[in-house]
Length: 407
Image (cartoon, rainbow, N blue to C red; front, side, top):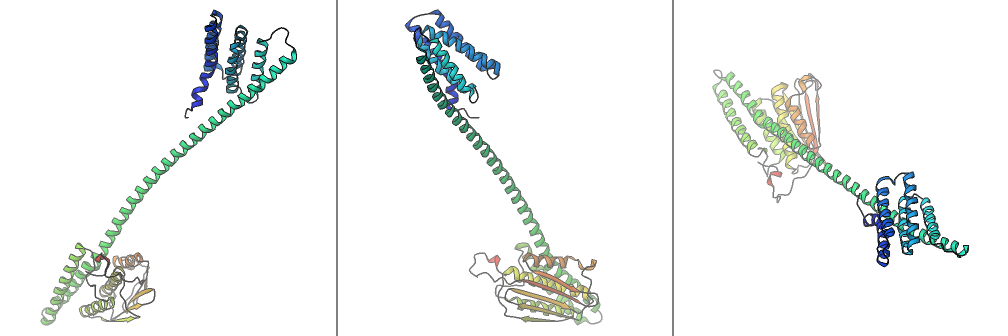
């Protein structure tokens, strides 16, 4: 606890009120008994207050002996009346509550008795006692007020230090929590980037390689039977291989989708991709656009395009369908993409409905706060229904071209 000025001054007051009168008395007239009694009073005060004054019986002994010594000194020289002020200070410093005023009254009574002179009327003695008690009590009240304020000041300082320590601990906890949040955010960002890279690779390179394998198998079947058909298949393989290589380079360099250009519309790109897909797979496909087509945010257009590509590639690999319908609907707040086929279908709740392609499509859509629904049943075909917010495209003057749809 902090030490105040009163804490430093108060212990020295009794010594001053004993030694200063002794110095004046000895300078005026040398008396060995004055020196001895003053030295004894100082030693007694030091011994009792520093060792045993905290207990009741030693406290009574302390005041009794001290008052006796003071009474003798006052009888020798009236200048030692000042020493009573030091006793008053000790009364209010050591005695609790109203006991302090009792100690003051006893001290005043001792002083009056020590200065008792023959012939003084009792009324004068009584008035001296009452006046002395009142003056000492008022002085004691001031001292006690100072002590109380001092204690309150120290308590307030201690409380402030405690609160400061708690605030410092809270600040340290907040700093640690902030560091943990940053670490988790970095980990989440790394995980998100890995998932995005996995989707990009799956949606570009994997799809292209799958198409190449399909064409190679068809070319092998056509060799020897229909050489022009085989050459056509190989030309398709070459085209798909080039596109896949371009997509791979783009994915490695910037992880941006290749088919969408700055001036290309999503509906046009989906229609062109569907036509190429239909030619390479032999499955009839149609594209229908409803609503008013408008430029959308690059992430929205890329996600819808990737969903369309993955859905069509799933049809080619698994559905054995004869016909596919792609519908792109522009509404006021959302854009919807439906891809439906008349193939063999599957059970969405079964083990055959949890491939990486479906998972990647769902992740793309949910990342945009959209809805992804699979409508399928064995023998009833499959429908992929996607709805995402119609976030408008950013202005072309944006200094970050990567935020736009483009290569």
